[in-house]
Image 1 (cartoon, helix red, strand yellow):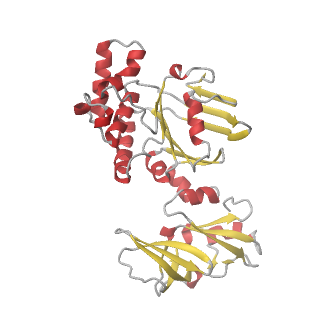
Image 2: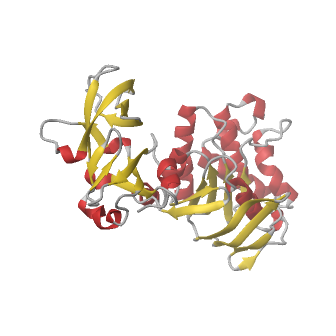
Image 3: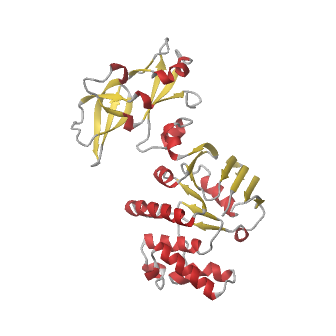
Amino acid sequence: MARVMLKDLNKVFDGNHVVKNVNLEIADREFVVLVGPSGCGKTTTLRMVAGLEEITSGTISIDETVVNNLAPMDRDIAMVFQNYALYPHKNVYENMAFGLRMRKFEKPEIDKRVRQAAEILGIQALLERRPRQLSGGQRQRVALGRAIVRNPRVFLFDEPLSNLDAALRVQMRVELKRLHDRLETTAIYVTHDQVEAMTLGDRVVVMKDGVVQQQGAPLELYERPANRFVAGFIGSPAMNFVATTVASDGLWVESSGVRLRVPPAKAERVRTYSGQRVILGMRPEALRLANGGDSADYSFDSLVEVVEPLGAEILLNVRAGGAPIVARVEPSTRVRVQEKVRLALDPARVHFFDASTEAAI
């Protein structure tokens, strides 16, 4: 397959620096996901790899060969787009075969590849249909099949599931994962959906304003975010943030509604901020309703504002002092709006961030 390297990659549009010194090494057969909010530069980065956008500066290499000046068709990549881009007047078979015909493949080889891809994707019965006769999920499979028949060194995916409904997105996520495991190809996948990123990627690259904020295994980003942005972007619901002040002895953080002891594992680092403001981070799943055995050091009072019963869990939207906080609690929990509840925090799952730089402490 292929190893892809991006070195000091930059892109400037009309004076706007949209991709800034991106450095990535994507291993052979690795599935890497670029994730971030709209306008963060992830799709532009992917399009530069594909050869659809000119590089302002930096280099892109595939298997040690610099491809900056190669046309897209000469890079041996296949790209699956958000809008599928199927030919409406051609049936499924012809849509999948078209790229091979343009490359002068022999008819028997074309037929073999198309039917193998159709079998992998479970669309053998759809080969004679036209795109208008297909559902959204079926069209997505055809777009994937058109890429698979190429047998490329690198697969590129540009938000391929964003046009599907929620249930179908979940199904197609699973199928994409199975497909990658079966084909064992190098893949770069772009999405704004952090759930897709976490479930699909061997490695996740979080971008903001054209800059790579952090990269690593999904659970590494979840458990050890490099800064407040990554902490808030990875995880659903998002991490709670409370502006607090570190006590003079460095042992406590306080706000108008929350006073918590600094966990021993974080005490040495937080103590250097004595008397200063820091951002306290608490994931919803690190919070629960307190009981009589919970330490006062890691619990606080709050007022329930919204209750969201989701079946397998309940999300409590509460307010502690002036801070809005979301807690993920057991489905058997029974509380009412405007009820006062005490929440307990798992001290092993507390995060602190510098109030000015937003870097993790």
